[in-house]
Image 1: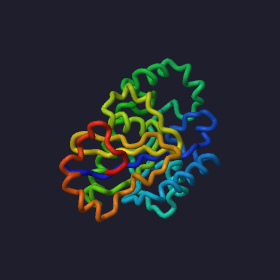
Image 2: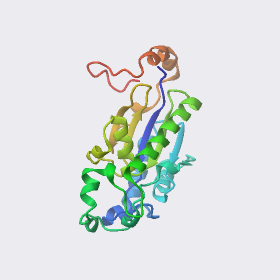
Image 3: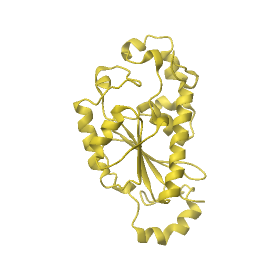
Length: 240
């Protein structure tokens, strides 16, 4: 079994639409003052993690987040990470949308939802998962199995990727939380993905950094042999 890279999913910082209780969708809303502070703060936490690559949704709120968090990065745009296409719901207040007949379906049976003049939630989940898995394979191939990379995206997109990693149906993804500027970490393996962090808004991220090169050489054979195995009893923690 071949070990693979580690994915960090970063949600953009808070936007003016988030603050006003609106559904931004694919509109060009920008970070508000709180969102800018969140982006700068998560950047400080990410300094301890060398990143092999940074990719992003094309929307400006994600690009602004990365400009503040990782000013030296050169993010690559990935269309598969764009926000769900909410169609006619875009720009509407959430309080108003909660009265729509489609709202309970979004909450209870999102796999069946197709937004009016917009995208199916199942299609959003499929293209987002396909995008991160393709990037993960590419980065593993180019940078090695100890690489860590980052993708900046949106709340529902990240929740869908996490649901896939956990092996749960999309209808359960509303149980997952992805706050603004939160970090979620996933490591894919040949047998199963491992969810390493979820909705982390303040923890130390240093444990996600690759181990020292000498240690990597010494442990590569053992890691390759059991990379997909879950430690019986829970294991020793952050060591990879």
